[in-house]
Amino acid sequence: MKRQVRVDNTTYLVDCEKRDGRLSLSVDGRRYLVDAVAVAGGFCSFLVEGRSHNAFVGREKDHLSVVLAGRTMEVVFPDPRARQPADEPRRSAPVSRQIIRAPMAGRIVRLQVAAGDPVRAGQGLVVLEAMKMENELKSQGTGKVREVLVAENDVVVAGQHLLLIE
Image (tube, rainbow, N blue to C red; front, side, top):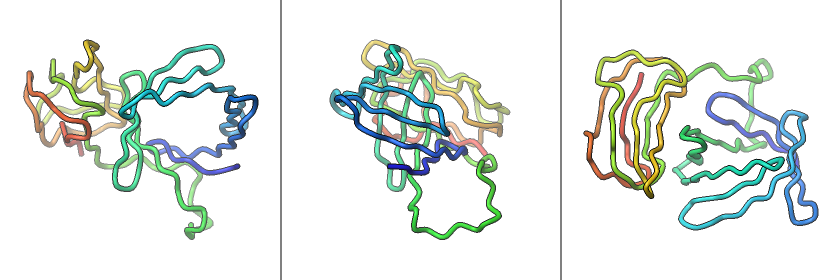
């Protein structure tokens, strides 16, 4: 089944088929063989082309929040029936606002930015310890930290807002 999927600000055409108990995914024409297992509580384990990946998937009101390799991504499955202007570019423009959320329950180990700090795409913002592992949450784009909503050693729950970047 072919479907558009938006990850952060980039839209991909994804074709997914089940074959021999595995998923065969085509992402913008590039094929991947994937073994996927939902572990528990939003945690998933993937084997992609022989490489193991672990992710946390949280459901928000209108999208999924996926944490993979310390990076939080917003994943949207646009309704194919929704009308889109013909001149809309395939790749979307960067968003002007980011809300950094806790992908899972844990403890804030380190804040790497403060209110007023400029940030760039890929920059580390917060280190969250969960299940004895430290996860660095990174910025998805450029902007300025408007508000820091937590402090070091705070215990947070999945989905809790940590930072606001504009």
